[in-house]
Amino acid sequence: MSRSGSDHGLEFLLAFNLSYSFTLHAPDGARLIGFDNAHNVPHRGSRFERRGEATDHWHRTEKDSGRPYVFTNAQRLLDDFFDEVECVLRERGVSLRVTKDEESGRSK
Image 1: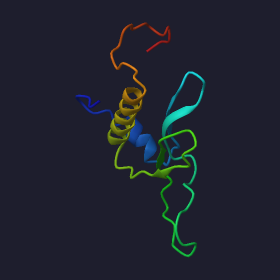
Image 2 (image 1 turned 90 degrees about the horizontal axis):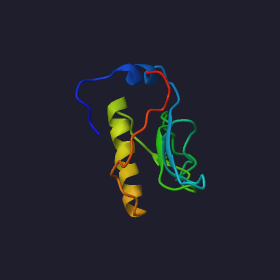
Image 3 (image 1 turned 180 degrees about the horizontal axis):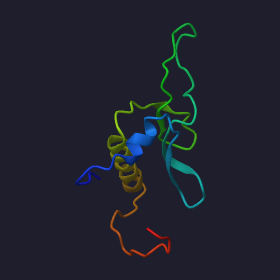
Image 4 (image 1 turned 120 degrees about the vertical axis):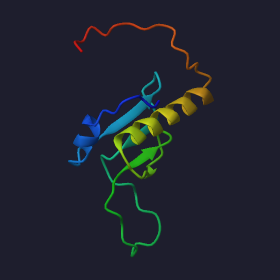
């Protein structure tokens, strides 16, 4: 999913601790994959172990409470998200080929 050139807009906003949530949902609304920093991941291990500051994490299924994600930059986040989207779609037998492209009617 790499792009030529660099768009620093998202990375600039994320530097201000802006919340993000990238998700893929099935037609019935079930979350199939998600990357976000909207909440802390439930802590696993000793209750005396110090928790990290970061809340970045990803969910592999609808019921997955989340696993830590190491945020490095906005482009890597988007690449990781779309790599997982492709994996989920392949697992479900959904073609990755674009069959139709329509204008959304929104101004660019």
